[in-house]
Image 1: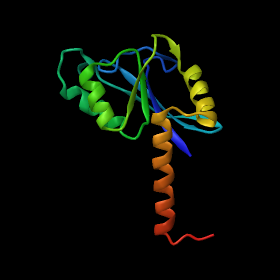
Image 2 (image 1 turned 90 degrees about the vertical axis):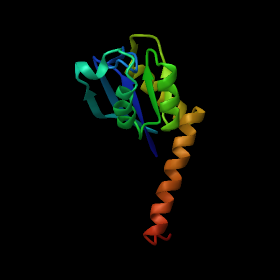
Image 3 (image 1 turned 135 degrees about the horizontal axis):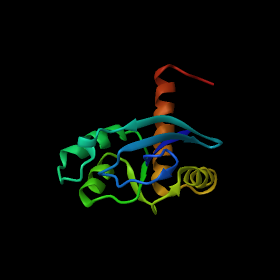
Image 4 (image 1 turned 135 degrees about the vertical axis):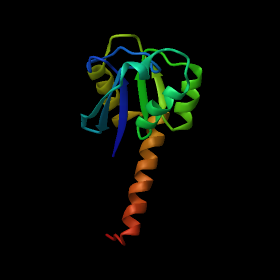
Length: 140
């Protein structure tokens, strides 16, 4: 079982971006014993300008659609609503928080007591996996 987690990070090492103005995201796949980078996405300057244009959020939210959460330094109310509607939990952390530190904490939580948003995503992933196995005619 695994979940995808995104981090608003220009340097790929720390969470250092506001969601709406994020220049880049790194996306990790987190499992019970591993976290691996699966994608790093860079945006053009015109896509990150803080000009109040709500349409710019759509591309970012679409990119993160299969992520359980996105970590950033700040996120606006409209973006929060859109992220939650897409099933992505926005998480605010202080600027400069190391991505590795967050991944380590998430890995520990996954093993012992996952946050509600992670438990929900893991439950959905398990149900989808079993439905796919059933559709293939899988048996013990």
